[in-house]
Length: 569
Image (cartoon, rainbow, N blue to C red; front, side):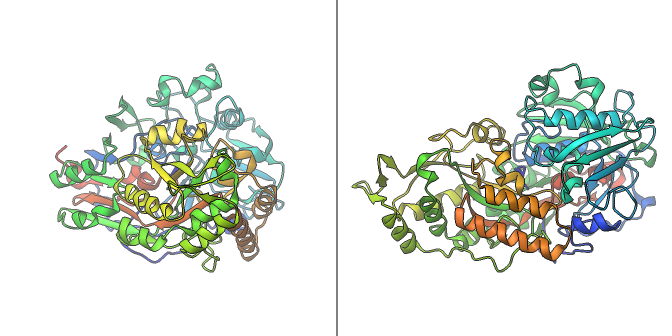
């Protein structure tokens, strides 16, 4: 996750022109995130269309059905396939997509109590098969997402909808919410949360949609590209969609994009050395020196919106003990992880909000200091006795856990090794077992089976708003709350921050949320990884963003010199 999850380049200062989604509610301003690669300065008259761009994916996508997965790499491909109601950019700003404008209180599309939201769609939109795309599709989509049989990856926002109605001309839809909900717009931003075609899916049982061939080879789409070839485990080729609503603007510029599911950072590096790819994202930090030697590529590094954390499966009886979870957090040496595993390419944090979030980020959070002695005393006092094999036990329970992350990721494997050694010093044994991303973010995490999933490491972010209910709210357990953790007091704070428009007040609520998370320890935050990506000289407008679609946020604007992308292929 971003998982979904969420990775960019050259150290840069964060720029916040309208520092919150809440400002958007009150005006026409949009939320800002992390600055990435500077805008391409080439004039429009110099842009040439054509070419095939090759991009390496280091994780295998598991679904191309919007809101059907938390995996970032799947959402990046979906940005190519689906046109969302609203679209982000490289700075984290939200713009109109299929809609004619971004809603605000000022333009009348959001009521003053934030309970009524109206989205106005562009006229004459069509799906790739030529069928009309209108507000009926949006209505169908939210109904599908709230159906438990579909098993949407995130329902934290959809759960706030009381009702909705479509206008007679089908060019607008008005949502009535159960309560004020400031982050509502983010549920519809970027291709991973785009509307689905009602005419195509209404005859398919909801529980069969992600089991159908459309799951990895959608046949009816709305984005700049459409699927031409789907070879799971190898590659996904998308070609220009002539029905795309911006086709008259000569978008997309490219003829074709090939997403290669290489799943191995070593393969990515070999592809870069041979010049056979045009770009890659979420690069291996351990290979930074090697990337810098590639004179024909430009490496980018920026602060990301994500936080890397160890997640505890509280279905495991031993992990229900907060003393065990806190002891793990005390035994994590964050600076060692940053300097060794990440080669310095990370920012130290201990909450779930990186500095990309304003409000959200808390620079003065009371982080647990690395202290093995304190961790040992905590476990001693809690009655966890050291066994002859140097593993602690209590009441028939043993502090031996499976520790997992996405496979073939060198810096995460380094994290595992470092954490394994440090936890061994406090009587906790970690058995490492990693999984392909397509398994890790689906059956592995969703299964929540103790002894199979105990501790798991991955990176998460929260779309274009800091609202973190999706990862920790009680009603998200088994959906995107893979900690299997529930605290009703935290749920009250989620509701409070979601209904608050004052930025300072909202920050104070996030601070209270952090206080609870740093008391309960459903996760042990490691750091905020800087995003690393690379693009071949001769490519243009490669400008990943900090949220959701990330690498491909502006894929419709990518282009190559003379309409010929330089990768050898």
